[in-house]
Image (cartoon, rainbow, N blue to C red):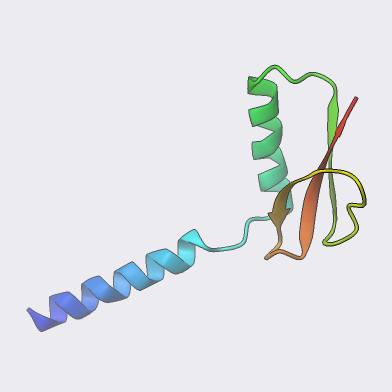
Length: 75
């Protein structure tokens, strides 16, 4: 009984770490691109930049453990 409880808690802890694992920028950029296309957005660009360098461009995602951001530009 105690072994099962410890095993269950260990698995829960590991799953939390996996869910919080940082996403590669290319993967997140592809997901955002697919969502925009599904909504019918036609003319836009997504760019991966270092965190804090987006300027006035809207940030639509964060990747590489928060060290990079994905910006959206319309047109």
